[in-house]
Amino acid sequence: MAKKKTQKKKVQCSKCAGLCCRYVALPIDEPKTRGDFDDIRWYLTHRGVMVFVEKKSWYISVDNTCRHLSRKDYKCKIYEKRPRICRGYKNVDCELSKEAYDYDLYFTNDRQMEEYMKIKFDNNKIDRLAKVGKYKRK
Image 1 (cartoon, rainbow, N blue to C red):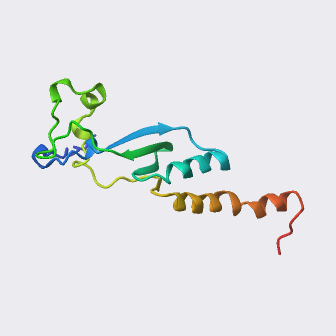
Image 2 (image 1 turned 180 degrees about the horizontal axis):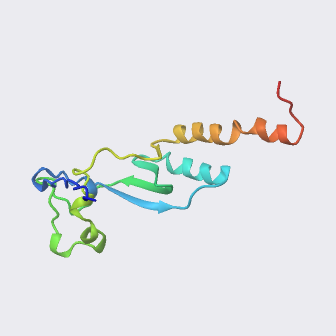
Image 3 (image 1 turned 60 degrees about the vertical axis):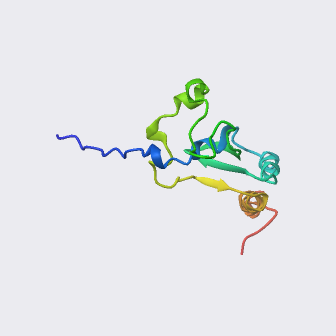
């Protein structure tokens, strides 16, 4: 059986705007309780903070440009001495070479999380009460 050739997109460094150098994203524990989700809601009250879920893993993202990113040409001013995380970043991971992200969930403010919490916790209240006989469905 012939193998299907995958076409690699060529990274165009000359068009780079340093997108990967404009935020920090870190994994966070998956929230389980209403309190956990409320803690995340607190994160989202701050400017430049987003929370997203990608491949079932939760992350907090903070918009904050690296101080070593040149504003003139978006090149790294310490490229030869850049941190290990930067050195590990591969061109195939470049945000210019990919389509838009396909997040499982994406929150940009506390109101979105509050709405999600209402759906996640409050809409299920009727089902829980019905199970213990305190609420009968019509």
